[in-house]
Amino acid sequence: MYMRDQVRGPNGFSPSAATTLQSLQLGAVEVRRIRSRLPGDDPAAGYRDPGDDLVWAFTLTGAVSVFERKSDFETPVGAMSMSQVSRLRLFRHTPDFEAVSIRLDRSSVGLSSSAVSAMSNVAFPGREGLPLVLFSMAREAIRNFDSLGESSKAGIAQSLVDLTGAFADDFLGRHTAPEKEQRNLVVRAERFMKLYSASPAIGPEDVAAGLGVSLRVLQKAFQQHGRTITGQLLESRLQRARTLMDRESTAVLLGHIGQRAGFTSAQRFSKAFSARFGQSPRASRSGHHESLS
Image: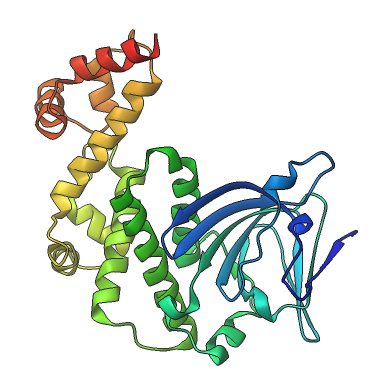
């Protein structure tokens, strides 16, 4: 398998090492989608060396191998790996390589050099557990980067830092602080609700069961953040309804959209939507389509 060599110079890796397709700055955290450089790519979209930052890389296509001192470590499709790029002497990737990466200030995560070394030689399965949550958050942040407010960016950045710390704690056998455990549980619950809240039968007990914790434990985690499970379920359904309203034509009845978002009746959907967004679903959809015309 042919792989291109990218050698680290005195000032880091060259901009020609890869092409940046998207970049989202979230304070101390940066999310990027990169791929192997192709002829004709915009020079301004070149690779930016992350310096001493820690980098989670999720390989989407192709493969990449990193070389730290004498070790050669490959991350195949569907896997996640961590590296501190300043330690690398070179990396190699296939011409079809593409990845999503999360760059974090190592001090914000609190990992020692030995911990980083221990985690830098493992390809973690990217489709299960916390690696999947990390990847999903990074991917969704990139997809919605135009609509993210500053508070959302800060929240995503903190969650990515906390999840990285929790993942390291689990991998290294360390104890995770209770406040981190609760925040991570809330993040997992939010993801679960986003996936399953379209079913009106899903309630707080089902969310807790889906996460493998008791309802009381999940309630306490949300209370620590001044929120409730029921409130987050409602928010998830309302956001889903807004997405459907923007995507579907006006021929689709609003009552049907409410049902597809998890509401048991058109009246409950309309009342909840109006209370949350300050206007009825009908007025909201009318305004959206007028702005597009």
